[in-house]
Image 1 (cartoon, protein in one colour):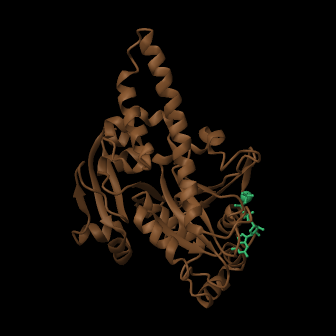
Image 2 (cartoon, helix red, strand yellow):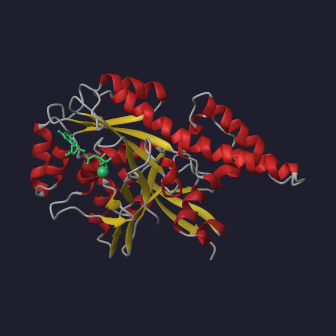
Image 3 (tube, rainbow, N blue to C red):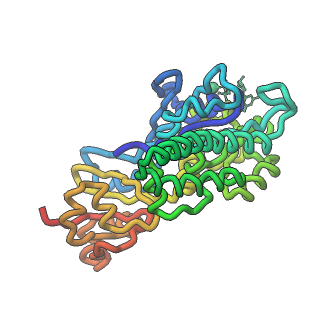
Length: 356
Ligand SMILES: Nc1nc2c(ncn2[C@@H]2O[C@H](COP(=O)(O)OP(=O)(O)OP(=O)(O)O)[C@@H](O)[C@H]2O)c(=O)[nH]1
Ligand SMILES: [Mg+2]
């Protein structure tokens, strides 16, 4: 299954690369690849429930979900962020992690540091990249219409709605476009339509971000999730032997490493949950949206399972971990038979029954 693509964006010298380094650091060193100047690092989604299921089933294959972090290299000689030049690349993101400098006195341009202004400026750059694209497309459709071609007209109405929203200072994600409209414009991969979470890159004097009040308030007002971490400190901790990490985190008032917190926040921002499939062959995590039905979950595993869906034998991982086997769950009447429209819950263990 494709990894969730989380792109790190932000102002120049906000600490995108430092944050990325913290996310991909391991005791064996950092793990990443490069692609056209950008860096990509894929990590396994930590999930204590899945690890506990592995310890019961001892499967041949153990397959956690994956997230790919992308350290976006901004075009060197662009004005502003240069997102326009990166449109196609950024369009592949599932979400943006917007890194905001929250340490020191001055920003990358040498101006007095203003994290809220930095956040707003990057959000504006995303919207402006969309606006430029929309204006070019509208112009093209209008020219075609003059020449008697009419097929662009439904699209034109939606684009004008989007343009009006952007002109009024709203991101496309906040316009609540009907699903049909969203489908019509999905091929544009608009940047301000993507979910955004904010990473306050704080100094090591304030590793839990206690002093990020104004930025937190700005995020709350915009409906954006925010988390704070001190990138260089988190990178150092992630490089330690695993047994030593928890103690150091605790010393700094942290409960989980940056990577775990960022992934948890991304799942929240994107409204994602996990379900699990278990067996001697494979114990595996799957990612779906909250509210998805059993038949959608089946389709994640295999399209044939969605087509021939009969029922989903379901039990929560908590109960399975308590009873230690599916047979014991079945005997105790705790293995439920759910239909196509069952709303899958986070942590469900599911076995799909389907006609081949
Ligand atoms: N003191 C302190 N310095 C930091 C922190 N995070 C990043 N830096 C420093 O800030 C500078 C810029 O950080 P980068 O991670 O390169 O920033 P970037 O956003 O990747 O920058 P560009 O890719 O050039 O746009 C570097 O000198 C980092 O060492 C931090 O939390 N505390
Ligand atoms: Mg960088």
